[in-house]
Image 1 (cartoon, helix red, strand yellow):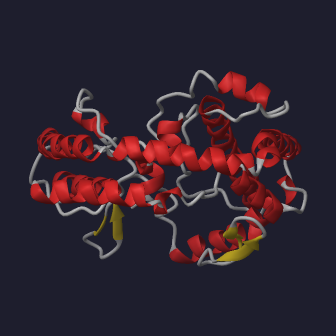
Image 2 (tube, rainbow, N blue to C red):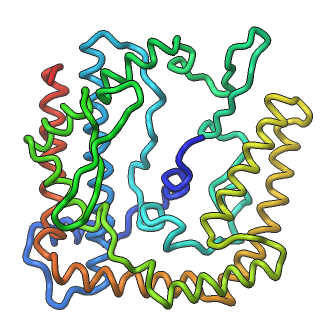
Length: 333
């Protein structure tokens, strides 16, 4: 199954209206003092820009493997075109469910979701996938050869790099993705990763370890426990519902014990029951309010020490995307 955090973090709610102002701010001197509205807008742009750089590297790496003779690719990661902070920060900050939404939109989970790919053994003993995926139908040797060309090894092993300001990160161990990273960053990809971290795009400010957040999480978990749910934090609740959607998809597509409509109705019942308790416990613990307040308190303090990196990241991301377009237009690395 796909990475749950990435999938749940993007619901396409739109970029904040202040983003246009942020783009101008990114090319100007940072304001004094740094206010939350400006920080929100610039952070949203930085995080979206980091995603756009990643997409550009993936397109360049794909061009590279195609030039090496590979024509069938794994399913691509989907990115929202205009993500907002609710999407980019996901349920780790904006975790409270909205009971006014339809059940499938409360947590962004549904049974008929292509991201839930189930595998079962067919009559001939071969793996069968419930979602069409031509790459998965290739012989294992061909898949391994592709990954070796793309990542430098069949197992897709990454290289751990120690960055001067934001600690450990990872980059491709070799292959076309490594070449794409170096080409777009002009040989300075670790420096780009460090910059992205300082810009808040991929870094952490330690806010989740704040005692206020820990206390609110404990209060939320205790409240949920009293209501019969064993979850330490909201992301675990969402993970359990995502797994439940997979079980119901299996009942529909593999076991044929229920129709899609029956599976969706069952999931909707469970989502509504869980979301009602979740919303009540959020209200009782004030979890989202505490997380928001603490997150922005930490981020604004953090930005005050890294203003140049925070405000200049957009330009660097644009330059890297421009290099990607030149490579794609040329047709080769």
